[in-house]
Image 1 (cartoon, rainbow, N blue to C red):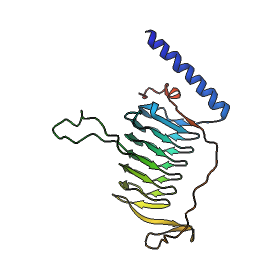
Image 2: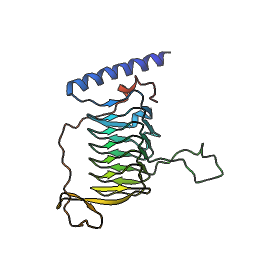
Image 3: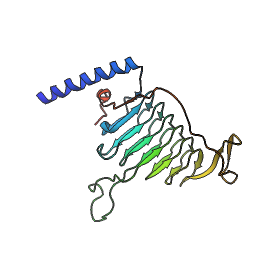
Length: 223
């Protein structure tokens, strides 16, 4: 009983400090109360970002892999993120409904052992750049990176890395267009000039990041 009381007092105190600090620095993020978390201590989230209704964040082992969400991001409704190795999401990310990021799977090396008990993998990482848009139902699987300024079409499955300023669709996702800064428009991959200069996205804003475990204690779906 004493451990429960001490734990409750600690997280109540941490939550009060968190709210005071957020108001003082005008830093905010929003996580819907129906979002389910496993391993929430492995989450780092940026200022002015949100995680939508009914999403599920599964961080299998925070000591081996974490989830970092940048500033001004919008994780859509019913998204699923399972973390083996690190997953990092850049600033101004936007995902539609039913998107998935999967950097962890069950260990299937030995088919004579029940996959239910073999544990999960931690050797894959997912990196997403700044200002990336996922349409409805996009899935990203395995050890891949998606460059800044890219767009992934609805229901696409990304299994290989996508360079900056690319538009990709399909299962598996293939690049169909690149953005031309000379022509200032999206062009077919066949018409893209590889010498086209690609400027780095430079969006300035206050960079506040949080480990929001204390603020999530009111959510009954946090583990």
